[in-house]
Amino acid sequence: MKAVIPAAGFGTRFLPATKAQPKEMLPVFDKPTIQYVIEEAVSSGIDDILIVTGKNKRSIEDHFDKSFELEHILKTTGKDNPLKQVREITDLAEICYIRQKKQEGLGDAIYCARKHVGDEPFAVMLGDTITKGETPCTKQLIDIYNKYNASSIALEEVPLEKVERYGIIKGNEIEKDVYKIDKLVEKPSINDAPSNLAIMGRYVLTPDIFNKIKETKPGVGGEVQLTDALSKLDVIYGSIFEGKTYDIGNRLDWLKTSIEFALDNDESRDELLNYLKEII
Ligand code: G1P
Image 1 (spheres, rainbow, N blue to C red):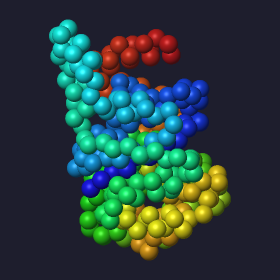
Image 2 (cartoon, rainbow, N blue to C red):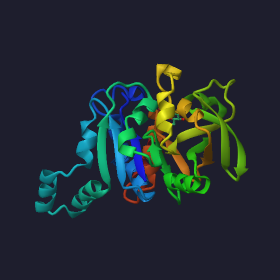
Image 3 (spheres, protein in one colour):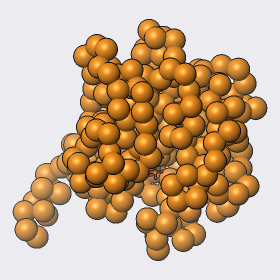
């Protein structure tokens, strides 16, 4: 299966940090955000990845490209561990790039992938969420896709006051934590939200989504919304992700995630704990 990672947005929620660098390259602890997403794809069995980019996104390509000069310096100075890490990044997966020429929304970004994807089901992975689970989130969705033979999206229960940030669904629970969806609403107000089950940024979609996107008019924010196109599919399932999601779409949650990942790391845990105690 192929994966599509949209990465063309301006990153306005992270300005000024994202004025001249892509938000996908902001590090969470010690790695750029997009690397976590690609590692999830790879551990889900995906090795063909299309990143939909835009202006000012060259550093994403550089990050996954081979750097002969850097490798040479690390090798000749005996820095074996960094050398290994740098080489692993390059060998992660086959990554292709396409540019979204006008920023017309998530739906439009996915539409840019239609030729690369062809007539096969494919995964969509958004960079605003990092996931940790015994079974990777996208792999869980691939399993649901294989079981029901229809598009499937990952869900997460969110507090009601946060529904306005997400696509929200309504559906019938057909087995534990799996819903047959009958309604999807992009960024509803608290009063209009049909539930608190949010679309969390991982999808496995059948290729008929491309025709549905084509038929979709701009929605919330004047953008072509993927959620609106998903509403047009005949059948779609949602499955609550079994694991932990880290929403890094805003500054504070991004910072919390970095702290949690640093506390998970043997080398930094004790020193960081002491520092946190000290400043608190
Ligand atoms: C997008 C989707 C939304 C989803 C969210 C998850 O919104 O349109 O349905 O719930 O990602 O992060 P965005 O965060 O790009 O505004």
